[in-house]
Length: 242
Image (cartoon, rainbow, N blue to C red):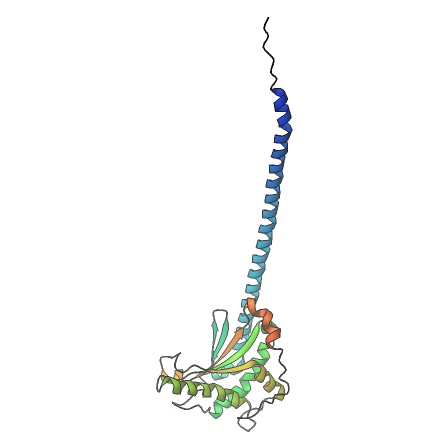
């Protein structure tokens, strides 16, 4: 007699179902897109990392090859000069065994002058070689003293010693070979001098009174500055004499 109304809940569910299906599809699409973006990002980062590793290895190999070529130079073996390879960042050539100084003096002996004028051209040739020139930056002539005297006195003395090395290269006499004008131009463009007083002492005073050549190489993040740093025209600047 009294019939309960038949409430059909299915209509409501049927009406809501398309919405929930669409939302699920949207979440799936977003997740898929996220995974694709992450995968692409990871691949790009991996390529960049592998590229940096390859560049670092190429730089290290270049410096090592350059160092080996310098070590095998006949003049080095003849005069027993010490060449040290320093942590992949620079090559140090300790000239103390050949170019040595008396206490308080900065003059170079004839033997030292003869060695410099025969050896430096081979250094210039090496830094222009295929294995070196890609990352080679400059040569710093570093002068040092022993502990005798004040800091300021030794600072000046060490600078005079490094300067005297470059002075010897400009000489034209019977002591040693005369460098060509092209070699002098390369020295003018690539060589810097510095004095370090007694900040790098050795156990023996005589060994502390020395000059070192420091061959510097471009770090990977500074390689792009090479062209700008050498853009100045120095062709009209004479080398001069001391």
